[in-house]
Image 1 (cartoon, rainbow, N blue to C red):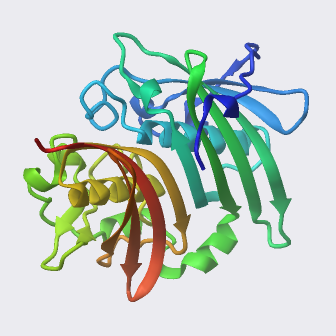
Image 2: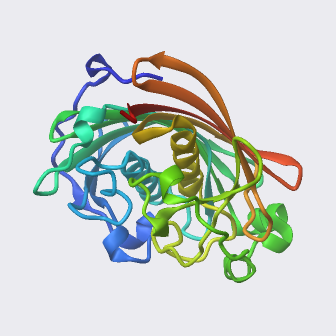
Length: 315
């Protein structure tokens, strides 16, 4: 999926209402990006507003450019909020991504002295209720920043009621217990491999003695990825792992992901090593590469993420 200016039909609905922070499933108010929302007359579309911080340990670590994951997190918070407000999903249901496909206009990621206004037009193309109480959703998102094209996305996600989720997850269902039993984080990749764009605190890969492979490095004390206890590795951390793996393969001064096409096949557990593998595909055009990143845990395929990055090569 590629974003172009012709992909956008901006909305001008400004009659938004504020968003209670707890509906984004964030416990730290400093990590809440969503500020308001409004329904459209068609009954299936909504406008969600967000404000991006001028300084952030992860999202502004790319030297005058926002990390594209800030858009992914804005979308995650928006969909979580809408699931509870617009679609009536109870707060005790457990939400999870199935697919995440997004493309970003890199010029719109430049930081500025003050916060910008992010406007997301979200249309739910599917909202299905299943017999056992699960809800399956599909959504399309068009995002602008200060009324200029920012990115588009397509996402499929699911909401499970507690009883069904507990049966699916078995002994891993309790978030506090799973967090307590998480493996300690391994060593981070050396600075030369992870790049200046990835601070040590945000490093999510550990080296292995195998080419193009790493172990997922999970630090449950990192309050960006683990704002609260989780029973599995969050999808946003897996996207960051894909971005860091693509950078490590690039041998570039810096990289910036411009698209993600992710399929989450299984939950990635906290108490077992997860191995990440990179499969460089091709150079789409000068300064742009495409990489396939896969995850395996307990001899099972857990996720697949195609990512496209723009690169600055070493002189």
